[in-house]
Image (cartoon, rainbow, N blue to C red; front, side):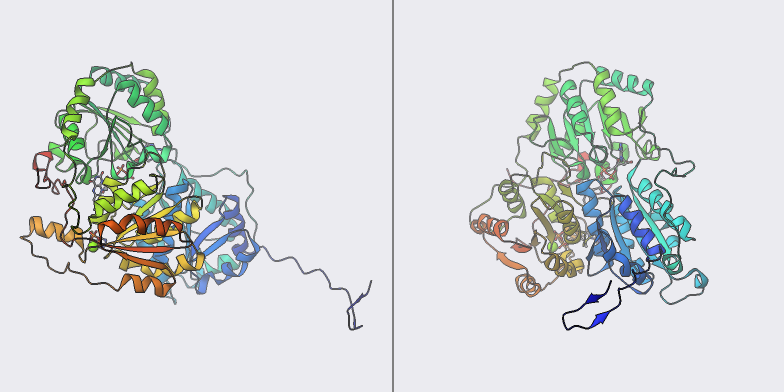
Length: 577
Ligand SMILES: Cc1cc2nc3c(=O)[nH]c(=O)nc-3n(C[C@H](O)[C@H](O)[C@H](O)COP(=O)(O)OP(=O)(O)OC[C@H]3O[C@@H](n4cnc5c(N)ncnc54)[C@H](O)[C@@H]3O)c2cc1C
Ligand SMILES: Cc1ncc(C[n+]2csc(CCOP(=O)(O)OP(=O)(O)O)c2C)c(N)n1
Ligand SMILES: [Mg+2]
C-alpha cells in the first residue's frame, strides 16, 4: 500500500517503531503501577533523567515540587490521609540528602513512605563521583529498611519488598537507591506471584489468647479505667472496635496528638488530647486512673512527662504491633503484641458490660473550667478562636495539616474531628516546615476534601517555596498563617523557664499577603475578631489555593502545660477565674 499525502508526494509505509527496550527505568514504572501508584512527588536531576524520560509512557502523575523536602512531606501527607504509601523521588547527592528530614519525620510517626533515589553508576560508587552520597548509609537509622539495587533483575522484587515493608506491621519509610546503570540496563519485571522474600520479617497481628483474657480480667477489676488511644488506632483502622470497647466498658478515652480522629471528640466518653498540652481534665484522669488500656501509642515523653510519676496508680494494658515499644518507656502489666483492630475486637468480646458513672462524673467535674480566658470583644485575635471558627465553618470535616509550634497545639486542642484521617501533624520529630507541603500531598490524595494548613509565621518560612507547587497544580489548599511575630513555642519556654530572655526568637517575615499574591495565591490579612468568619468563608469559596494571615497577640501562650520532664502535679494553667 502507498500512502498519498495531500500535496501528491508519495511515501513508503513506515516500518512499525521498534519495541522500546525494557530498561530499568521502565521496569521501575511497571513495578510502581503494580503497587497501585498513580502519584509521585519528585524533582529531577542527572542520574534520574532516564526515569523522567519514560514517565510519560505510564499512568503515573509526577508532581514537580520546589525542594525535595517538600516531596517527602507531600508524600507523607498523602499517606496519612489515604492510608496508602506515599512516594517521593529525588536525584543522587543533594536531592537525596534533601529528603532526609522528611524521611525522619515519617519514621518517627510510623508513616508508610517509599523514597526512591537515583545513585551514581555502580562503576563509580565509592569514588566521590559527582553528586555521590551514601544515602543508604545516611538513612539507615531513619528508615524501616533501605535497599541499594545492584541489578536490574532485582528492581521489580525490591519495589514489592519496599511497599510491603512500608505498609505492613508498624508502617514506616523505606528507601530504594537505584544506580543509573540499573535504570539503563535491560531486564524483566519479576512475576506478580513471586513470593516476597524477607526472612525474619513477620509482624504479629493476632494477639496471644491468654493475654486477652488477662486484659479482660484487668478491665473487670478496674473502677477508674482510662483508654489511651494513639496513632495505631488510625493505622489499623480500629475506630469501630475502640468505640465498641469504650462503650461496653463505659471507659473514658484520651487521645495522643497523633491519635486525634481515632475516637469521636463529640462522644461523651472522649476526654480530648492528653500530654504536655493536653487538657487538664484528661491528664488528671490519667493521674487518678487505676487502669490504663493504652492502644497503638508509644508512651512518648510529650505524653508521659516524668515517667516515674505518670499514671502512678494505674495498672497498664499495652497493645502495640511493635514488640520493641512494649515496656520501652512504661512497664506493661499485660503486654499485648498485636494489631490494634484485631486485639480490640477480641478484647471487646472478652469483657463484660461495665458501668463507671461515679468516675465519669468526677472527670466531668474537672472538665468544667473552659480551656482559655473568655474572649473580650475588641481584644487582639486569639488563635484558639480562629481554630474554633475554622472547626465550626468546616463542620469539623476538613483535613487539617499543621506546622510545629504553638499554633499546632492550639489546632490540636480546638480542631476536634470525629472521624479519622483528617488530622495531619508532625508529632515525633516535630518538623517545622511540614504544614504546607503535607497539605499539598493530602489535597492531592483526597481531592474530595476541603484542606487547611494551619502554620506559624516561623515554620511557613521554612518551606514556602511549595506555594509555587500549589499554584502550578491549582490545589485547593487554604493556608492559615498564625502570625505572632515570634518563634512562639520557643519564646514561651524562654518566658516560663529562662526568665523571659527572648534570645533570637523574635522573627520577622515577609508581607505574607504580598508574598501570596506574588505567587498567584489569593491572599488576605485578618486582624480583628469580627473578620474571622468572613475571611474563612471567602477562602472556602475561592478556587485554587488561598492564604489567610491571622495576626494574633504576640505573647499568647499555650495552656495548660506540663513542663518537660515534670508531672501532672506541676501543671501550669492560664491565670484567670
Ligand atoms: C510541639 C509539640 C508538642 C507536643 N505535645 C504533645 C502533647 O501534649 N500530647 C501528645 O500526645 N503528643 C504531643 N506531641 C507529639 C508527641 O511528640 C508524639 O508524637 C505523640 O504523642 C505520639 O503519639 P502516638 O504514640 O499515638 O503515635 P506514634 O508515635 O505514631 O506511635 C504509634 C504507635 O502505634 C503502634 N502501631 C502502629 N501500627 C499499629 C497497629 N496496626 N496496631 C497496633 N499498634 C500499632 C506503633 O508501633 C507505635 O508504637 C507534641 C509534639 C510537638 C511537636
Ligand atoms: C526544623 C525545626 N527547627 C527548629 C525547631 C524548634 N522549634 C519548635 S517550635 C518552634 C517555633 C515555631 O515558630 P512558628 O512557626 O512561628 O510557630 P509558633 O510557635 O509561633 O506558633 C521552633 C523554633 C523545630 N521544631 N523544627
Ligand atoms: Mg510564630
